[in-house]
Length: 266
Image (cartoon, rainbow, N blue to C red; front, side):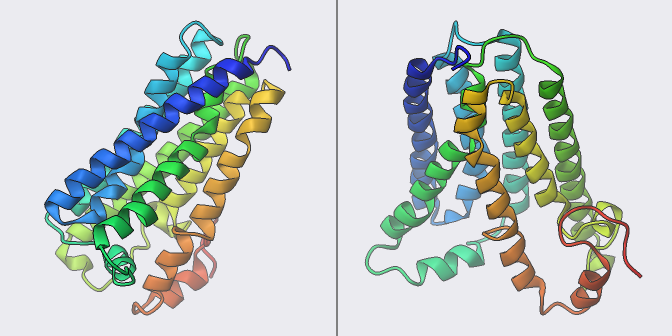
């Protein structure tokens, strides 16, 4: 189909799975030594960067060089920025309450339970969600307007995610903000600029491979899964459950879009 190298792609899938697993197992070893499993959130971004790099190496000589370099750089920039942000945010803190609640359900060894239910699951998700990055390495032919549209959508996502995270970090770092709800900057237009940014990043990366019907078909599950995770899974839904009891949050939610940026409602 359109020159897509299915055999080489299958081999690349194996290498990327090994890269994702190696990142998660290495992080697990560090977490057990430190006694804190929240660092697995740092490994989420690192896993994508590792998969992008390994996919590039495994596909040497295949696909269009420009597209291969582009998706690798875009993915690495996104993943490393996210990992660095989460690492800074969690510095000096103990275990994440989410993991405390999860580990409280463990029967037997808590670390082995975390390995099965957190690390291996996240490793599998990294491999699945990164399918556009992996498939892009084998798409032949030069990039068209569709690929550049995907790059522009990725840039919009990076802007919302990075700026939204920075604005929230400054807000939390200001003693005058204690007890208040963040409703400034991008947070005035959407309750989740960072999640909306992730959404744009992964649909953008998907568009870059859509010039090949074969690559698009094998990759479309990635942005769909990420969209579900962000809106119905561990993203927006869980955070809003946690925030629902905060004073002023109901009023903020009533005037602010739940996901896509929109002017505030009166």
